[in-house]
Image 1 (cartoon, one colour):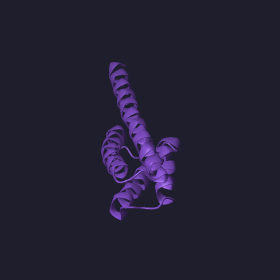
Image 2 (cartoon, helix red, strand yellow):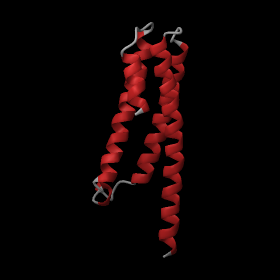
Image 3 (cartoon, helix red, strand yellow):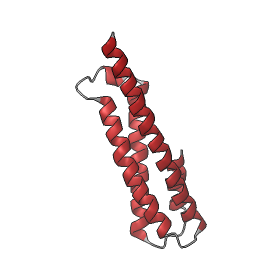
Image 4 (cartoon, helix red, strand yellow):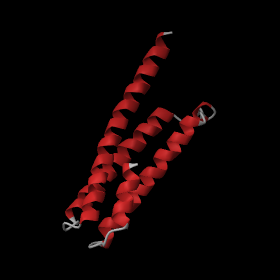
Length: 122
């Protein structure tokens, strides 16, 4: 939700630097689409049918790369905001989404390690 709110804030504001905010919009939308993709895979349990893909590793790499790109985009958006409230709000929600993605990386890694370690014991 914070990615979508950040996108809407930046999209509805007056832009001062086209490349910085278009980069922010691209990163937020790509990250949001990939997060929804992984949610659909988990909801419909598609990962059970496609066993050739290491889903915990794919999810970990997605969150890692997406978080790094989102952090860079938020820093660029914050530095180019020039005190325009919509752009500052978009950058703030970008930083919030970055923190949430870091928490998701940590919880995803923790769950996959616990699942793998308990399944090897049985």
